[in-house]
Image 1: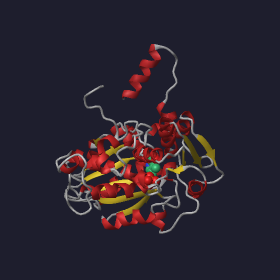
Image 2: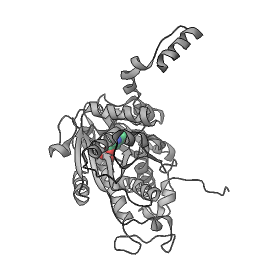
Image 3: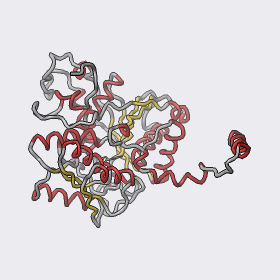
Image 4: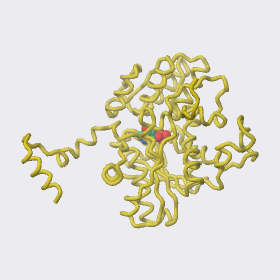
Length: 379
Ligand SMILES: *Cc1c(COP(=O)(O)O)cnc(C)c1O
């Protein structure tokens, strides 16, 4: 048997913080443990004294943070004897469900909206062998149907209304506290179905409890000297949620009937974790804001071209918001700010098409032509 320090995913690392029974066999692809990257170039451009980081969740096994929740949800479903899982999805949940179901040897049914799903995500669901059911409706219609299916058909629901999903997703907050040695002052993230903002708040809240305090779980492995206990932090961040203007129910104060945005991962009009997200915002003295598609794409381009980080459009809204709020002073100078980049840019390669004309030059296959092009572009 191999010894050493192989990272085996977040159930392996955070078993003592997750409500799984100890005999549940983890279904894992090594998710979690993603980098926290400091954005020095963008901060220099803004000219304010802040520390700005991104938690690059696009580097999870299927390219989005959904894997954190899926490993726990699928592990629990299998432990309960489930033979099939189901979800509604704007794309990333279905990609993740498909992969973890394949690994577990069970069936995945994924309901996707009519059109408007990024090609990379659909490709993943297909390649992992999921049953893809495309409905003539949007995500919110799909959500209503899968909740019914979980009641009436032999399938386990793995959308973020499944509490095991949020349990897994909260571990991103643990990792951030461990990396910084404290909690950030602000945490900014895109809000769609509002599960992730709920999960981060749960994670930060658990992290802020000192060992032995009411609300802490007994650690199975230590007497208060494990990595989690050592990283216990004194404070929690202000939670800031950003939405796309065409799908911004938290800004409107009510569900949005026909959500529209290029950021398909957050094209959701009736968030399932509405009350929890509002509570996180209120308890942390946070706020919500919105950005239009143009601002979202502009920020995605800033991240790719200035920092070398390719996230999908939905993810970029967190940085669009952070930059705007740092500029305006709403996020004070001297702050440490973390933005979640929820998914990888390769999920949605279609957005690159809009830049292709400017980026791609077509030349004769001759050194002279290539040299002329190089010299021209260096000017
Ligand atoms: C799922 C998802 C979101 C939205 O997260 P919620 O928990 O639904 O608020 C944002 N970005 C990406 C890339 C996603 O996959």
